[in-house]
Amino acid sequence: QVQLVESGGGLVQAGGSLRLSCEASGRTGSSYTIGWFRQAPGKEREFVAISWDDGSPYYANSVKGRFTISRDNAKKILYLQMNSLKPEDTAVYYCGADRSVLTSNPREYRYWGQGTQVTVSS
Image (cartoon, rainbow, N blue to C red; front, side, top):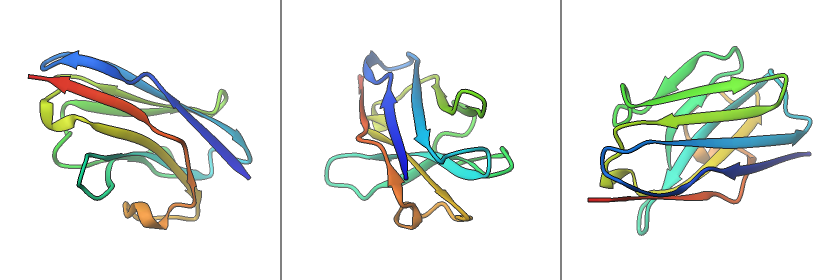
């Protein structure tokens, strides 16, 4: 029903910036909750930032003040601007979405992209 494709990952030095994009197709629209999640090796997938269905943002404490989530509903693109990157941010970043989801638990989201690797060197 919904397809998500992430892009924009790469290798950066600590303190650098990246902007991730998630392009949605299918039935994803402004009524969807959509967000960014990440998974580091040996770790559980965790939420990073969520754009609730009304567009309001919600951030994990670890990224507050450094990351900014935004969405372009007309283009069906979700962005994550990541500044002041730290080695601890290294992970595969996934875009996740669902309709009628009001939690930050990634297990509650049905639709996922394939992920994009972000590596931050020290």
